[in-house]
Amino acid sequence: MGQIYMHIGEEATRLGFLAPSQAAGNPAVIALLDHLAWESCNRGAFRFLAEMDEDEKAFECFRMAGFSVYTRQQIWKIQNSNPATSDLQGEWRPLQSLDTRELQNLYHSIVPPLVQGAEGLDKRIVQGLGYKLNGELLAFVEMISGPNGVYLIPVVHPNMREPHALLSSMVKKVNIQTGKTIFMAVRDYQSWLNSAIEDLNAETSARKVLLVKHLVRRQKVEALNPIRKVLEAHGTEPSATIVQHIRRKK
Image (cartoon, rainbow, N blue to C red; front, side):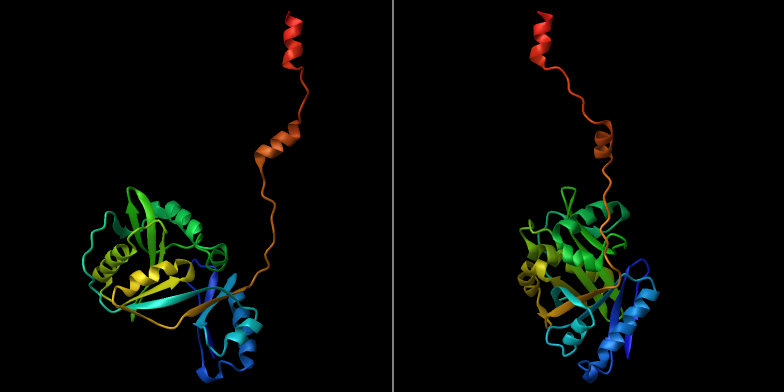
């Protein structure tokens, strides 16, 4: 069996589970994944996302079914839900619609294009917290809440000099708001955060592989440049040189 789910406003479906687990390496999984991809297309999805351990037996089946790796991550479980207070100049606050442009600018400057092409932030609303210092958004964390805890995906500018203080204050804020167990996913392009999270009395699971199968064919579209069009339509006309103009005056 297999299950997929899709959130409202997103352009990708996600694999919920495959069962039974002992059959994950069976070649029949390829046919199941093809069927789930077909069902994803029927629901208007452009991409099909999946996540698994690096040593999962089903990895080769996913590759044969057209999936490719777009990044890897570690998931941390924060044991100490009330970390010590740290001095931090800026503050974490809930993200608002006014933060959308700054959030997208930070996302596009930090997250690699391969990940952006798989997850597509532009057309979905991010629920979570943003960190501002002197009016500039330097970090944000996406929050996904469930019955067993809250799942966090941070995006932090590498210019932050005190990642431990930043994450400590964020974890404290999330705990006050939700009171749930905190799980934090750190992607490979943000791996410099791992040492700071480890200092928060956190434990990590096995590394995860994030996979994507594109369900639509990409097509290059010519980007219109109105200024260039005007210049090409008008053309250029030769004119008399400045030297000739001065001589005629004399």
